[in-house]
Length: 299
Image (cartoon, rainbow, N blue to C red; front, top):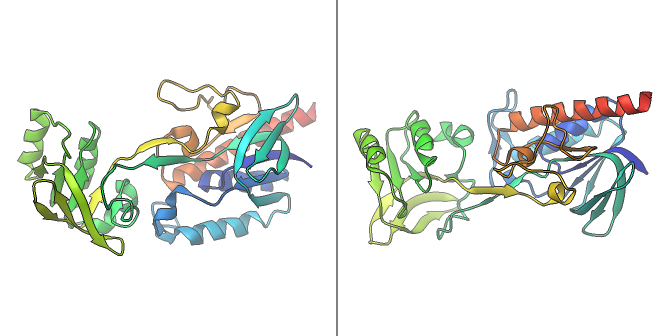
């Protein structure tokens, strides 16, 4: 079967695109391996009418709405290869299934590289966070620690200062310039320069940070800034160009530099976005695909 569009990745952006294309009466195939980045957390915030919804409930509701449209199919497959033919694209999955589509939307998202700190991985998404807008409100007036390991950490501290004045900055050996240090200390923000030995907690709840000098600092949460990278290489394998920051080059309608290939959601941003932003970007991408298909069919 030749699909009008194959969507690789079933996160908020990909599912949103499928909904719009389904309503446009286009045949759509979603290929998703069911390992979303937000699987480490329980709730999703910041999406109007869905604030605080459980991540799995959001996903199931999206599936139910999309499957209302008979031209949309969802399959549990991990895509390992995509190639362009003269008038279509061939998609190959890990279990050697082959699918063909006129257009493809890549919405594979991104993955994080977490700081290598003992105990962090088991707490991530529960009491160790990366997004102030996703998890900050629930921690207001709590004692929050921030891993200061790059220059952008200062902005995160400024945001957290709006919900609590009990902040501990852990440099983990990263140098802070004297001006920034003075600014933080003027706000009564504690700075600990010793390397972190271990995070201590149970059942996903962080209770203390242990340092290599023997110090223990009790905290309620830790914010970190992971390093982000593409979740897969489908875009670049197809020959799509990227900019100096590693983001795929798109026009204002989310078309990549390869005709028939579109990028949406975090896969295009190379930074984590709110669910609402990803859903909007997926919708906009689908409208572009629908219009491009209509123009081609009308000729």
